[in-house]
Image 1 (cartoon, one colour):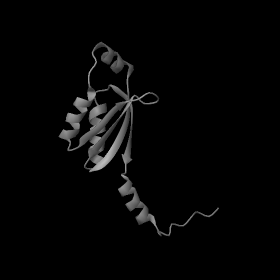
Image 2 (spheres, one colour):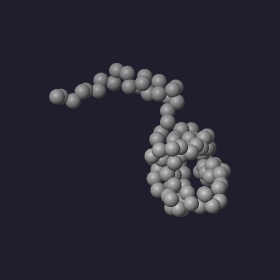
Image 3 (cartoon, helix red, strand yellow):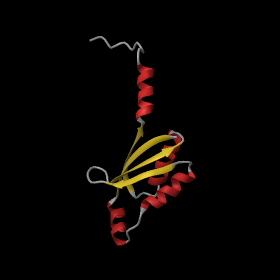
Length: 108
């Protein structure tokens, strides 16, 4: 399984709905990810450019995109940003594959 982090921002209408009726959105997201073959690992709210992040596993990038599309389709999110996460072990494997690649630096 691959790891992903998606940052998200709610619309002002979504925040107004949460103030009227607070709810744990991680429960709903967990169910949707499991339907797609993924698994929710963490769900956090944040301060700043984005309102929160989710860290999850998915079998592949297509499934991760499907999860994001499922979440944004109702219209309560105004922005998302998804990043592939590498474990230290996977990063070391990538470094090993890159070693001695012979990539040529562009001429200046």
